Amino acid sequence: MMAREPLEPDMPLPAEMNAARRRFGTVTMGLHAAMRQCLAVFGAFLIALAIPVGILTPFLPIGLPLAMIGVVLLGRNAVWGQRWMEGMIVRHPRLEQFAPNWLMRVVFGRDKSQRS
Image 1: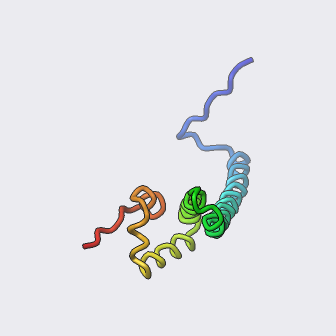
Image 2: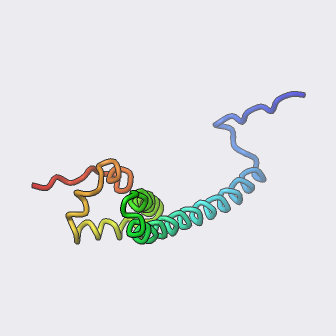
Image 3: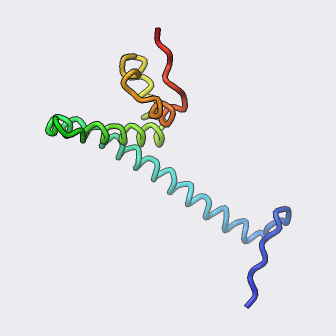
């Protein structure tokens, strides 16, 4: 049995193959958008869940990792979540000093701003 020959990068694809790829691409784009929104909502849920968990377990730091995972999921997967977090940092600048530098780079793509 012979292996399939790879397509040449400069060779045009047949019309039916192009249509199938376009249709499949639309479906996968829709699935990716839905998955990103589900991850963003899950991140918001983890942030909301971290508050009572942190209060109920004061000696075990379980709430903080939950909140950090939620912030990363929300900030990376939703524009509205990233805008909300930027607005919170603008309104309450002391929040930024509590965030580690790696978290600022992961969520916002920048380092912490230098305060004097």
